[in-house]
Image 1: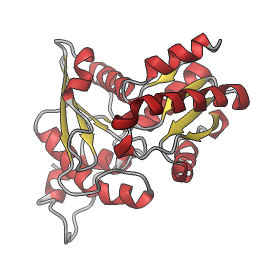
Image 2 (image 1 turned 30 degrees about the horizontal axis):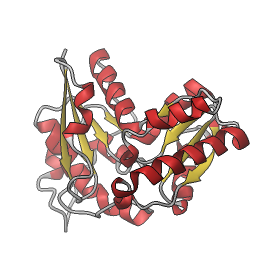
Image 3 (image 1 turned 90 degrees about the horizontal axis):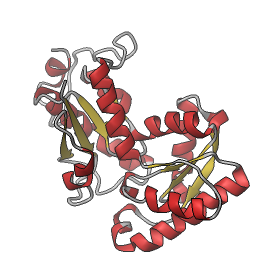
Image 4 (image 1 turned 45 degrees about the vertical axis):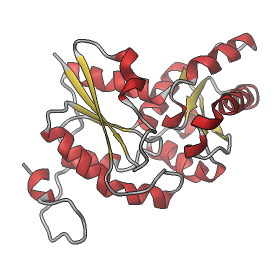
Length: 252
């Protein structure tokens, strides 16, 4: 069975994500597609940004399923629109934060979440609580580099991620590290290598590759989210959005 996984990057900034990023993971039975949202924020760094991204995410999710995708990944560690997307499509929808938190709990019991900005702590604390993993949540760290600055400061980013990870392991007894921004794609190996050199062999989770393989596994095992939990939205008046025929499509 071939899996077609569609990655939705929930911002309008070109170049943040490329299909070239996932080339090493592609196989004859795994295809990856990608889209940005058409309307929304340039980056997601707060709850307001997240809220502004959701209508565009829903639009892209519906279009992806109609185009034949067999699973969807929302390319943001705030998991914006995750539950809403599950209400409007029937294929699996994965949030990388939810995926990483559960895998990190399995692999390391307690995990640390290292992300871009301190101001995201309430959001991440809330996700850990919502996903029932507060007992496994060793702590939060931030390198205070805005999302749109990651690429041009990548050496500094890797150094700060290593230092924050080491602190979480030694001070908070984290058994696994989650790279808490999908913009950190590709940094995990370098950080894990440096941690091992410092005497700590711990898993460092890179969200997009992990979510991609988890999505592929769900497709190949024929599993998706529960229709008894994620109900289709009831038809009603809708004003001010570009989601033409939204309720008809969502209930088709």
